[in-house]
Image 1 (cartoon, helix red, strand yellow):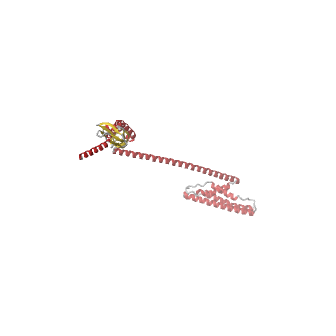
Image 2 (cartoon, rainbow, N blue to C red):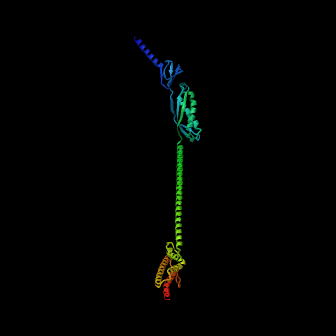
Image 3 (cartoon, helix red, strand yellow):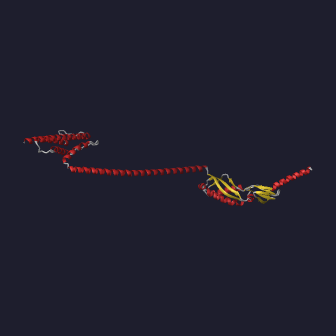
Length: 371
């Protein structure tokens, strides 16, 4: 009985194991190939599946999701004989579990080697600069070649991305220098453009300011000229209305004489020859200003007044001439007078003549009274 119990237990255990082997549960996005008696029989779909124990053998599960594989950097020679290291990333998906299982032994390794050879073929026809700037072109060419080659393996290559392109260290340093030079060049160009624009704006501002200043000066000169013209017109009209005689003009001429030597830079002063005639005109103006047909007392008083006025005018003229002479002597220096000659000054001579004329007139009037 003990032997029968043990046999029953063994049979039950074998039955449980058989049932467990007959039932297979496949997860979602997975697949499994079944071999019956060593030959491919079918592919198990996700869910509950039954197989014949000890006859069917279930292969390992195959992942049907999109997978990402990053390959180590591979040295590639460009068209201009430069060695660069290129790191790629591959996105693929198993579409046929049977082909992936039986058409290729290791599809990941096969994809890696195919990627390297295709990459070397593509990069070999490009120089370094084009390689660095044509990643999209390289990716599309790699994807096309890999998708065509892996189609019979039951694999679809979705994307191929170049993660990094590392040129040699010397090339990196040269590229950095070139980039630095380009940045310096752009900075210098921008600085020059700014300076040129600033100079243009400054010149435009100066031009506008000069134009406005010139217009203001023109308006001021026009107004000043109008004022001077009106003043001259009024003076001219006043002169013509009052009808001045040459005696008044001679007196004004004598008053202007001291102003001729007031300049600090005057080193030579010329006394005009008209000074004598001007002095004579002034003396005659004072001696002949009053009428002669008067009484003896009025004639005596008028004569004395005219004589005093003439003497005063002569003194003023003499003082003005002396001041002008002194200033002229200071600026020019003392005049050299030869021996046996006397220095003659037309201003002094004119003043002396005016004095003599003024002193003779009072003497003539008493003689006329006695007559």
